[in-house]
Length: 260
Length: 259
Image (cartoon, chains in turn purple, green):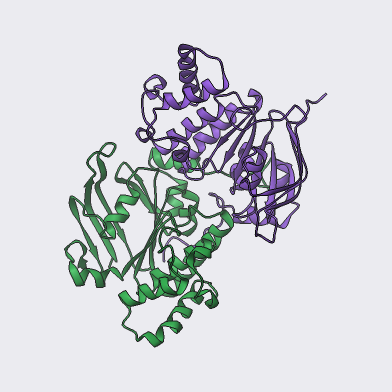
């Protein structure tokens, strides 16, 4: 017997006031517990809009259509759903220590004593492989590199023990070395650990390397969705083919030779 | 003869982590050549770009560009020479005045660099837009209404206005989606062939640099640790950082791969 899905999108759409075309339309999508799903598509395809809508973070002026079903009970952003954004700096208050950030989340969602909360905060920083977690609690965001700040943002997102972690272009602003480390961290934290993952990216190879399933968006519609290996090997939408054709790696044809 | 010769550049930033941004850095670029400069965040890539573009002064070292002592240029001579070395940055939104129109952005560059009568400007602007694949009827539109890819095309058009010999591109495609990125890279290669432009392509992404560069220089901690023809650096990396950058490129499983 398979466990009940975390959510089921049924004919889901979203419309912004004053815009002719809906931002999302007719989306049918389920997510299983502990499953890793990549949402991919070009800029403006609606992948971030969909990720935010699932987390309940759509702008108040927007109008949803269809529905999101929560078979295991509704999930709340911040507690049941953790969210990591592209710019880790934007998730952190420059005037607060890393410890203060974590204690705020832990106090809001738990009944821990201060001592227990501090121990938990240190354990979270250790879990995201931040060097010297004890010292980091006393430090401020600007004292960390971009990759380290993203690790801290991930620690904050998972502090309340969510069942779903959403990473919205969480590695796009990082260099490829740090990107690979953050992807490895997201892989370790999710899946077998019981936490589901929605990974939003425009990079189909990154999606294929991390996700169990890939959903391809184009102009607000879900045009292809399936196991990662199937989507890569037998793409079923023109958009998937375009993303595959645009992928650059070390086996792609070069556009120039060795001399001008 | 080389177009650009950089020797022994040093630059320290007081207070920055470690303090040393450029550490005895040397490189050369031939006319019409693309050199890809790759390295992790904080290795000094953007510090080098700023020094080359005369936005920042090095503590030591020399730069010769088109046979001139580039660091000695001042005032009007520097202003005129700047047309020969142009730049395109990562964030096409921040590179323009927030209320500029497409035509206005190019008119600013014409005013600075091209001694043409005003009545010729609409034709010059339309030609530049066409050259980078933008429809000339975009001219009256605000830059803010363009997509990221269109804005980066406009940034390239603006860089082309003074007929430069070298364009420095600092993470110019990093903020674009992969489909748009491919289109901009193809545009750069086409323009380079047509115009004989030299390009310095700065990126943390080895796959991007490899696709468009004749030669690759690998940078770490303010130094060039390895340089050579693109395939040589990729097939036989000499430095640990090059090996790590190669391993970090997300690879797609190929359909022809054995299972």
